Length: 221
Image (cartoon, rainbow, N blue to C red; front, side, top):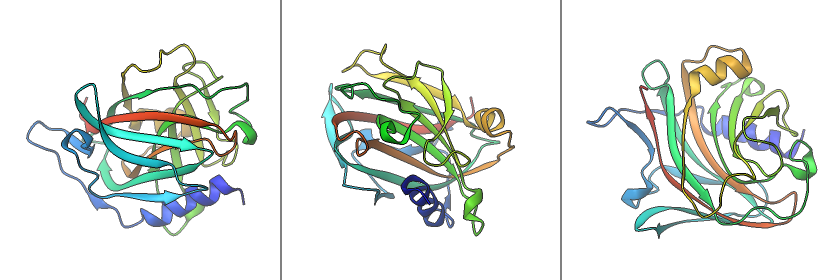
């Protein structure tokens, strides 16, 4: 069993008893309220060496900073979200530098990303049925490309939302219909997701990168 698949299955076990989430007065379901200077209910899970995550101010707003130096660890928010009510995931992110060198992120030796956010549907006791949608800031794959993860081809799909054409040190805003993406990419009708995971990793390429994540929330549209 590959390292990434072991990590994914570990996440699946961890999120099996996820808590149900409710919306705020604006009808938004917050997963990461970093602008409020909180990491409430986010838990660190190490894959290889620790990526350093911390709250800091960028452009006058609080956000989550990730510094990875030949490391790979994620922050997991165990949360049950009803995609019938809140199908759309919203967030913003930025990177301060691109991963240097040339590598193929579709291969195990190049499976590193300056920034990634993924949503997990736990297989429960049948952990091999766990599925994850990975939205990544790619290095070589063009924006819009989709491919199976090099370490967990049946369990995880990678989607390049940003790539080498996106400017660094600039915030980029994302919006994805998670329910539709699961239907399109896994050919699977999904009502509930069980966790959201952040991960900046450089363990395979042995490089260093700094990224920032803004608030993350689900909405009805």
